[in-house]
Amino acid sequence: AGQEQRPPLQLGEQLEEAREEPHVVLRHEGVCGEARRARFRVLRTPLRRVRACGVLAVRVADARAELERSLERMGVDTVDLIQLHSLVEEDEWQTAFRDDGAVAALFAARDEGLVRHVGVTGHGLRIPKMHLRSLAKAPFSSVLFPWSHAMTEQPEYVADVNRLTTHCHAEGIALQTIKSVARCRWDDTDPHFSWYEPLVPGDALRRAVEFVLADPRLFLNTTSDARLLPAIIEAAQRFDGRAPNAALLAQDRAEHGIVSLFDGGVLEGTR
Image (cartoon, rainbow, N blue to C red; front, side):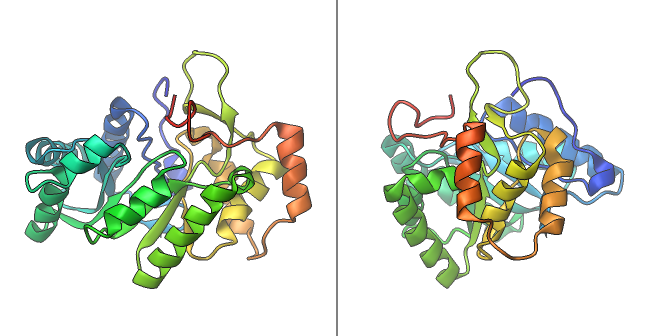
């Protein structure tokens, strides 16, 4: 996450909430409010219209305060979706699900009409299993997890994603995917528009988008690097429902150095 990059409103006001760092979330919520005041709708993905915000806290008071600040920044009285970010670590998970935890606070806000739906997000290879654990405790409306064709080379993760996808589809829970157009992690510490290096516009990016969209159960969330929105939107608009050729995807991985951002160990976090 680096300098501010505003989404191109003329392309439909697509806005991806970059949740990797709190200040990025705040910045995009401000853009959200600006777009609304300009009488624009905000899209979370090219395919579905929602107004959304995120919560990074695990305690009731903190979660409620974050929600109220988000509503104020976006200039709205209610949002369609609020998501708890990264319920992965055991201590944070336990705290969030306590009677005085963030989960209770957000579902109370839903009952008050401040939010319509509550979701849960996360990074890393553990997140599908943790989402299933969270869904067993609370009626979340959506989950969010990383998914790309590079991650199909991690069999255990694929199996976990399949279990999560099957469960959520059967229960009517939205499946949001991130990192579809990720190439690899940056090998420097310079400021960037996203914490990972994305693919550049071209056939490899188009096929990466098509890989996700080929599963009709999944939503594709756009990258926080808004400069790539035109290419991603074009790929989505041109998608004909057919999955890209597996050999071409393997060729893309080899030629462009496309790898999973996570390894379940040292590279489990977002940095």
